[in-house]
Length: 255
Image (cartoon, rainbow, N blue to C red; front, side, top):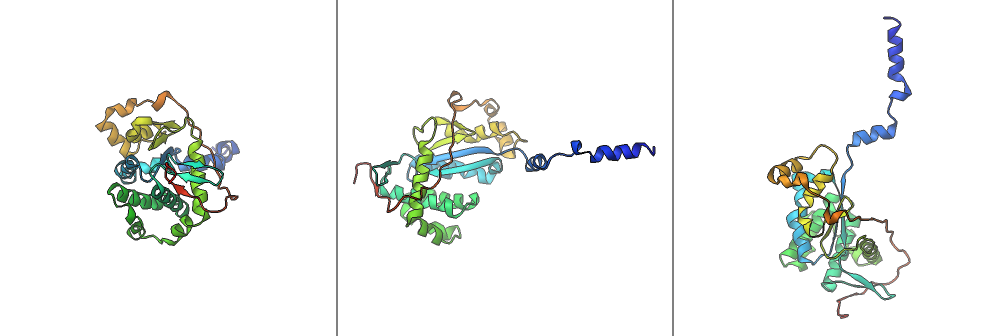
């Protein structure tokens, strides 16, 4: 027995049996979250309804714990000419709110904070009270200064252009908004069922929301990739510090 114990302790302390720090950290962190991206524009009625009536639900049912959510407020806007003129589908007020929401994401990196603000704004849009968007600062208990300063200066302009480049880099290109991508797969018209795709893609123990969803809709267990496996390539887009002056916000008709 005296000879067995040293061998036991040798095996216990052997480097080959001790997981490297990176592996140990990965195990402690759990399975990777499922990438979920929403490409949208602030005054699109389908977008506001999706954010308020569907996407906000994952913060209540716990599915957010399995998701890495990215919001990209740009949509069907496009840049025209050498002076970085942005045309928004629903006119200059949409450009303003796109900019405001981009600034909110930048000012408050915490997802719970900037989503709460954006959800508040989109709820007002949905209820035809878009002019009251500034009331969301008080409703969410947020200091308006960082967002107001951002969207009134070059920081907000550069963010809008960054999101434009990110949207234009979609492969395949987006066809409409809301454009929802789960784990690299665009969902096309099936975007309202995004939770089923998230649950299918998640590699860990199914969150409670997924378990409840599978009981209500057994089809979740058989869900297939949208678009027959059409791929999506994300890119890192940096702010362009060479941009000067204001971004002019105009309607599609040029007015």
